Image (cartoon, rainbow, N blue to C red; front, side, top):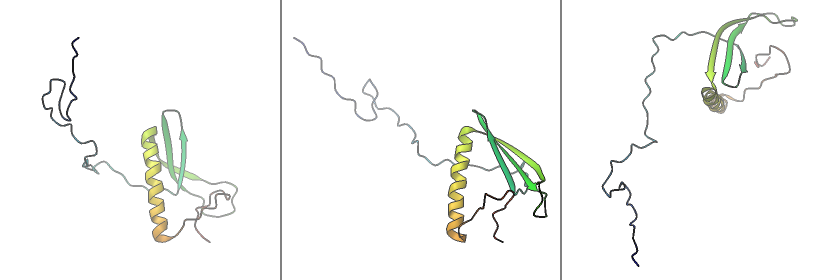
Length: 123
């Protein structure tokens, strides 16, 4: 009876027993170059979010109602940003971490969401 023996592959060898080039590290740092040439800046104090199965839509604008106690709010929408679901999840994580850092340095942001149009500012 003849037994065929197989030797275990050493790390870095292919099936022929020859050394393979090591694969690049997955956790290598990636350099991001931010191109600001097409960027516009706008201010928003109102944001609304809706979603479908494939994407999230963020609407940004400014509250045009300057007097309190009015029965309605006038919001001038200025920007719409549509994100795929993965970008929306990353944005959610980034915003959460950034707000925690902000509150650690400047104090907790208290939002009274029971009052429509409340900016969360004290007073």
